[in-house]
Length: 309
Image (cartoon, rainbow, N blue to C red):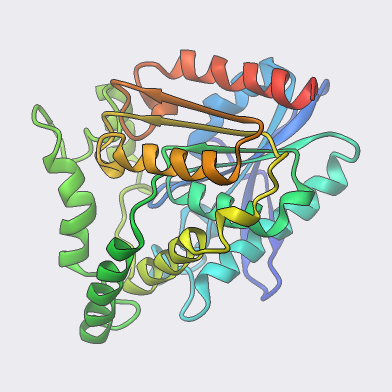
């Protein structure tokens, strides 16, 4: 695990842990938002690959994740109230730092899984401040599904409290994802086909933790916002966008959710859109068997769509 690079003060005094992989010949910077129950230091390999392509990488730990946790009681918990908006505000704080450090350089916002939802919601609200958007292992479900989940979360939150952890919600999400890999050796094989990468995740004390009912509720609020009438419709149609997902990822129903997201993006964002779906890819594509190919495709897209824009 790489060392923490620095910390930034959020608008409410929260300390944001930030990792930075700079390069002296930077063509631009990618700001990546990590997924649920993981952290920014896991992207060191991506940072090295981007550096080789003369791009810098910045990844910060979300609230309740990684080294942005000052009290272990807060792990897996954004905030007691207004968590989604606080997470978006943290993105803005890091974006402001990037703008100061990389003046005149293009910067691209990227997000993986839960981070892709944050990145997309942020881009919907702040498209004009970005030069590109990357969504990794993202997903979109019909709004009725989110409404059903919302009802479940309301009941579980009433029963357990906002800081409670629900065995039911875990079974319906991570538990269900695990069961859909028929030849699994661990409950985390749905993340990657590479056993070594799965072992790294399992042995990382900052990965795989539970998340609170309030965090799940906050994230669902974000998904409802993204999928609403004024969500994707307001995304800048000229913003270059690259989405890549695995068709063997249980989180997006083996490509079904990715295809629905792609359909919505093509409807409201027909320009400058690239979608790659890897038939055998699982959830963490940057840690999967095809990671070198996928990373090369990402750096090529950055060169073709951002630099030559």
